[in-house]
Structures are given as C-alpha cells and as structure tokens.
Amino acid sequence: VAGVRALRGRMPDVLDPTLAAIDALAHRAVAALARAAEGAAGGEELFAELEALIDVNHALACALGVGHPALTAVVDASAKLALHS
Image 1 (cartoon, rainbow, N blue to C red):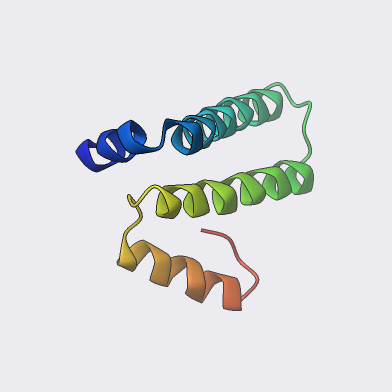
Image 2: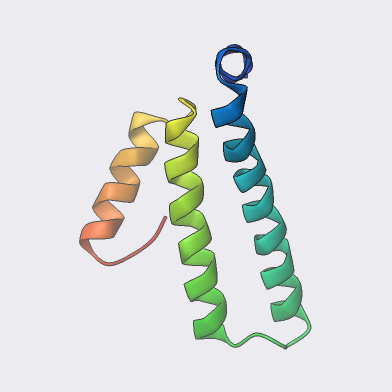
C-alpha cells in the first residue's frame, strides 16, 4: 500500500484513473454476482463477465506494482489452458 501511495504522489494523473478502474471492476463484479443470485444472469454470461474482470484486475494490480510472481505464474498457466484465474 505504501508503494502505491508513493507512486500516486508522483503520478496522480496516472494512478487515480487506475484506482478508479479497480473500483469500477469491483462494483461490476458485485453487480454480476447479484444478478446471478437473483437468477437474472446465466452461467456462461456470468462466467464470461467475471473472467474478463479477473483478467483486467490482475493486469491493473501488476501495473500498480502489487502483483505477485506466484499469482502471475498461475494466471499464465491458466491462460495456456484458456482458463482465467
């Protein structure tokens, strides 16, 4: 968190939109899961949306410097099998 704070202090014009995007991803995930709980979202539609959100979230976390090599290895291995993690 301290590293992100320091980076934001140096580049708020870059970091603020990135943090806003992460916030938007979280809101979209909550909305998708709520639709699923209400039965309004089908399985394939829900999974496709969540997969995209997961992929973008991981990329943004890495861009902020808060990714982890082990998680990136899992993401890369999953991608080779057309999976998302």
